[in-house]
Image (cartoon, rainbow over all chains, first blue to last red; front, side):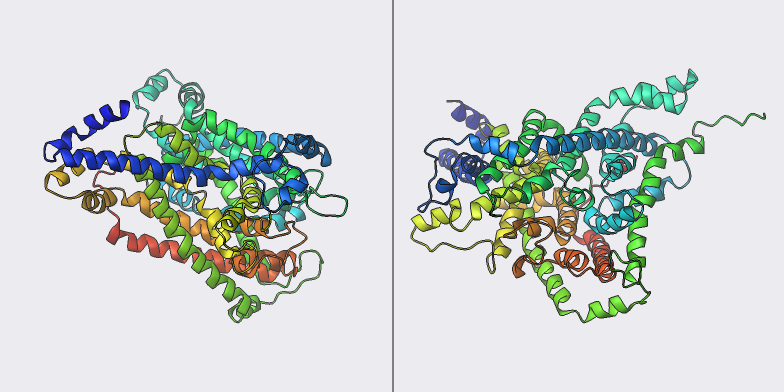
Length: 298
Length: 307
């Protein structure tokens, strides 16, 4: 009866002014809360289950009227088809390579820039930081179309160089995350190193970078999942041989007549979200740290 | 070599450290934007080497373009529905979870997870749910005796897109939850002692305390919603780059219109002009909101964020 006890503790303050009916009302409202939460959870989690069920049905079961909730027998072959109908492993490797490269580069470059804004001084810093903050608002969609035109002129289309460049250029969002972290570290730490004759480069690599391990993990995981989920850049910049899973699974599962294969596509989509879900479930606190660190200071 | 006087902060060091971002910003953000402005003054079609300067003709044409105006109005209406719903939804969920609950981590995970699911997978999932014949939503409706609804075409596609956007409300919820936990309990306690009911405490103590976060959510929400493009493209019945022009009227938002100018009509110049108009609208809107924020956002005096 843990609920009762915890509610008793919780309501002890209110009981100073409240009375027994107030306590009962509270308990009833707790029950209502769980009912609301359960209903919402069904809506939020439902799509995952429906995807999985679709991935386990035969095509006949999928279109059957009235709708069948469960497949008579789980069709694991949909997953085999997802793997073999298109060159799934190759696209998965492309996605993995691209996301890893991008995430490693952008994590490190953002740490470097964030350190600069947090610990160093020079004329123009304030203005530059304001520009950085306002570009945080600028969505990628606005620049991706001219970027595509520009990159196709200088021969960067169908290569992975754009992601290397984007990675080296740091992300304003992650820079901000690193800046907040580095700015909170006491000054004495760098003083000692400066007296010992350390340069700023070594101070950063030897002292600040090791301290920032949780932020490094957060930045890596966030940028990895962004890139794994990105659709528009690979759709524009990469052809059918170079593209990523996100593009490959959207439209390429078809029978010989060109009809879509929803059950196979569902299986492919399940395989595609699996890494993101695993990363998220095991490292949720890093995600929360990242999202919260960016949003709280308006 | 003459030795310089020692300085704790040699200027060059700062510039070296922030250099990657500065160069990246100039080459990968500012340059494409300016390039788009250049293209918007031409009749470039994306492939042929022949093009001419047309001055501001693309912009004057845009002023009288019925389709572009319709798409803009649709985008504004869409934003005006989605942003308030998702901000209020995020706050509501956060308030629900900001209590002593059993398994609070589990609930949080369930609500938060959809917001990190890649957009492509989100679109596939919702197409499976909203499918006319095989979708679970219509199955539920038909059990209750209602007619099956074709969700992914007009007029329902608009609402289907709203639904898809609201599914990702958990990201905002996490931020709101952190904000709620930052509200000092003494303040709410004091208001309660003064006889304020739960609603009044929430309305007059909690909300003002977290108003900077709400404000941030509204701004980023509006900007993001204004530029939505991938969701409508992926939700359209046949979804590949080739079968453009099949996005239903209802989800034919401004960026979809831009996309079609580029890749359906091959009007790169005109499309770039549309992009610039969108950029200016976004800019103007952000400045406007920043001005108005002073009247309704409550900041605490202590601003250690600048240190």
